[in-house]
Structures are given as C-alpha cells and as structure tokens.
Length: 315
Length: 248
Ligand SMILES: Nc1ncnc2c1ncn2[C@@H]1O[C@H](COP(=O)(O)OP(=O)(O)OP(=O)(O)O)[C@@H](O)[C@H]1O
Ligand SMILES: [Mg+2]
Image (cartoon, rainbow over all chains, first blue to last red; front, side, top):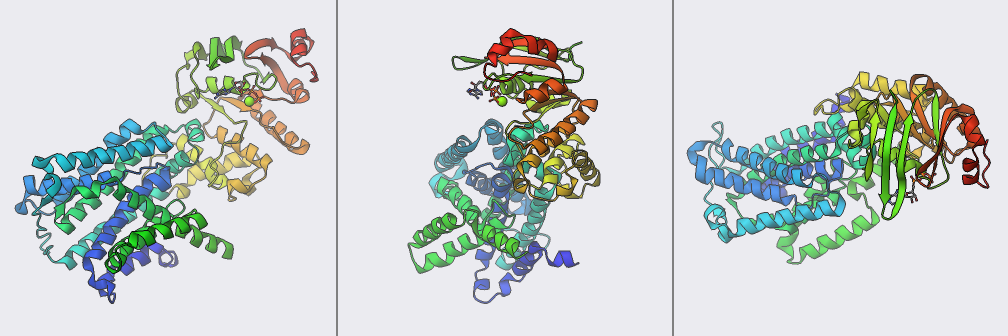
C-alpha cells in the first residue's frame, strides 16, 4: 500500500481522472484528451529514445499514419455501424506495420543515419498523404468521421470521449512502464548503453531495435487513431517532420532520457504552451523554443533530470 | 581436435595488415598467453576470433566447427567469451545489473515483457554467485561508474563469465592496475583456469612466463613463435622483436 501511494503514475492517474473538475483548465476538455493521447505517443516514443537509444526523429509518421488509418477504416470499411473499435484497431495495425517495415530496413543503422532515415520516411509519408487524393483526401484531408456509441456510451459527448482516452492512457502507461522495467526492458537498456557489450552477452541488438520499433509504432498508431477520433478528421500536416520534432523536444525537455515520466512532463508543458500560449501570443513558439534551448543547455537531462538529482542529493 | 584451428587469417585496415596470413593451431592445456609489442594485432586477433570484425581471408575453426563468419552473439553460443582491454560496461547500471544483463540472457529470461527484471530470483542469485566468485558481492548495489578501476576490470571479466563460456579470451585484464590489484586478478585467473580454457593477452612478462603453459608471440600481425615458455624465451627472433624489453 505504501509503495502504491508512492507511485507517481497513481498520482498522474488521479489528476487526470479529476481533470474535468479542475477549475479553468478543466473546461478545455479536448485539450485534456489531446494531453492524454500525447502522453501515450511520447511514452511510446521514449521506448525508442530513452530505453533503447534509437533517435527516431520521424516518429510522427506512425502517429499520422495511425490517424489516417483510423479515418480510412471508418470511412471505407466500418462506417457508423461498424463499431467504435475498428478505427482504433486500424490505427494500431498500420502503426505497427509501418514502424515494423521501416525498422526492418534501418535496424542496423545507428545515430545520425538512423535519425535521418526516419525523418526521410516521415517526409515520404507526408508526400504521399498530401498528394494521394483518392485515398487520403490530399490537401483537404479526410473528414466526416463520427464518434459512434461505444458500450452504450455516447462518444459524441466530449466528456465521455475524454474518459475513453483516459482509460486507454491508463492501460497504455501501465503496459509501457512494465515493459520498461521488465527483463525485455533491461535487454533494451543494454542495447542503448553499450551495444557492443550487449552483443557479447548474446543479444542480437538489431533484432531488439526492430522489435521495439514496431512495438512503439503500435502505441503511436493508437494515439494517432485517437487523435483522428478527437478531431473527427485526418490531415497531412501532422505528418510534417516538424511535428516529429515536437515529440523529440517534449521528451527531451521533460527528461525522457533519464526518467520514465519525462515524456509526460514534457508533453504537459508542450501541449499546454501550444494551446494556451498560442492563443495569447502568435509567437509563442519563440518563447517555447528559447526556453527549450536554455533548459537543455543548463540541464542536459531535462526537467526530470533536475528532479532526480535533487532527490538523490537529499537522500 | 584443436581448440582453435586457424588458417590463413588476414585482416587489413587500409593498406596495413593488422593480422597477416596467420595459421596456427591452438591446442589447449592450462593457460595460453598471447604476447607481442603494442600494435602487434592481439586485440584484432580476439576481435576476429569472436566475430566482431570480419577477416579479409582465412578460416577459423573452433573445435572443428567453422565460426569464421559468425557474429559475437552467435559465437558465445559455442562457448567463447571475452573481456575487453578497455573496460566495456553498462555505465548507467549498478554492478549487479551489469551482470544480470548477461545472466538473464543466459537463462532465457531476456524477452519477458512483463516480468520485472530485478525480481527474478534465480537470475539474481546466479549473478550474485558470479560476483561472489570474483570477490565483488559487497559492491553489487553500487553504480558501475563509481567503482575503482581495478574493480571495473574485474566486473568486465565477470560479465564475460555470464555466458557460461568454456573458453575465455582475456584482453589485458590487468592493464593499468597496481601491484596488489594485479595479484588479485592473477589469482582470479588462476582459479578460472581450472574450470575454463583461458587465452590471455598480457604485457607483464614475468607473469606470462610464470602462469602460461603455452605462449604465442605476435609481431606485425604475424606469428613469430608459439610454444612453451622455455623455448619462447630462448627464441632469438622473439628477443629481437622485444629489443629493449625484458624477456623472462
Ligand atoms: N578498427 C581499426 N581501424 C584501423 N586500424 C586499426 C583498427 N583496429 C586496430 N587497428 C590497427 O591495427 C594494429 C593492431 O592493433 P591491435 O589493437 O590489434 O594491437 P594490440 O596488439 O592489441 O596492441 P596493444 O598492445 O596496444 O593493445 C594497430 O596498428 C592498430 O592501429
Ligand atoms: Mg590490444
């Protein structure tokens, strides 16, 4: 029980369970949903970056493709009668497949080469989605997706949809955290910290890179699909490489390289800045960018890094 | 059956052959040492034997099985393991976790998605057992980056033990250590040599000549001599290769 109470995830769950009741911010219920699915997205991204050391700087591809997959599943296959889950499953399948495919071809690449290939991949996906009118709606994107009823709950209601996102987030966060602490997670850590030694202990490092990449793509695709349902549309601009950069920035800012919770902290800051600062001032990105540079120069391990060091020096 | 049967092994870096047409049979009894001046190709030789780099030509048989083109993670399944001249650890882990990475792989736990790695009692026990054997159990919970150099060398060595090897390739396990620490590692190696086949790269001639059954001398990537310590010490070519260096 003690240990449970000390678990940061429990408190995060608690805060977001009560989110709609929080004064002021709680009114922005879509913002809350977006936060939750960004948590899923950045946590899955951090399985690659923080856990395995894969600089996947084009991770937005799987998020974007997941959102398209959900839209297309809904529009072409399932429709309003096809149930609520079909688009989500579509997003997971496509996210996994795309990441698996890319991962298979770049699993032996490292560092900058790996990073650039993932960026190139996301640009290719962007190009295709931007142009392929028949399937992706081209520049106009896809719209007309309706959130249908799920288990008798009306998902058109944004509060209900928020709680669906919350449940998915809870499950995803628990899964990702137990993976990161598992035997498999330690194997991934060994690949990140010293891939040569890891090989000499019997690990086929490239295979681990491939598997974790596909796994991460599954969660990214899932969060993309939720985003599609939230906005009831799919657009190519989330596939733009700069959007992938947002994920990297948020994760580093929060301290994903040293802490499991880093991506959550970073997403919180990024999404709130994006939605609140931007309505106050057009050049909010300037402030956000500057603070990013300053914080990472002063604290290379991000905000959780500072927090961890504090805790360590107290102990 | 030789332990290693190596024929025509060649590795070039650009124009320079770090290992040049080496053919040698390594028959094993006791500790075998590989000596040679700096840059002779000793580490490159280990890198080739363990599949870390691919040779330009030649063949490596380990107990009559061709292991020439295998990768390190495949080689270890044949019972070959190595330590590193420059310690190669997981710097952000504790001493114990460094060893657990190896033991969990060896015991087949490495792909468990939802089992906490630090709660696997048998993996942990095995890891503690290995640390115990090298006298490092009391340091288990310390961060690997924080322990003294001598202990890091031993940790590097104990990680090589986690794969349950039959043959241990030790690349200068005592480089940069004090007298007392060298003695400690020498004892560890002597103990290990009772249960493992040890191939040792070492610069300390007194030590090499006192503990080795066989000595292989590498020079400019070629085998200068191979034999018992007595015959190596008398070998004139060896003496001239070591000009300015004491031999035995
Ligand atoms: N990856 C590499 N690329 C280019 N040259 C290399 C590489 N690895 C080794 N060499 C060269 O090959 C030669 C043999 O190096 P090696 O490390 O095998 O020597 P060594 O006998 O282990 O020396 P030492 O006693 O200093 O450890 C050296 O001249 C070295 O510079
Ligand atoms: Mg060397």
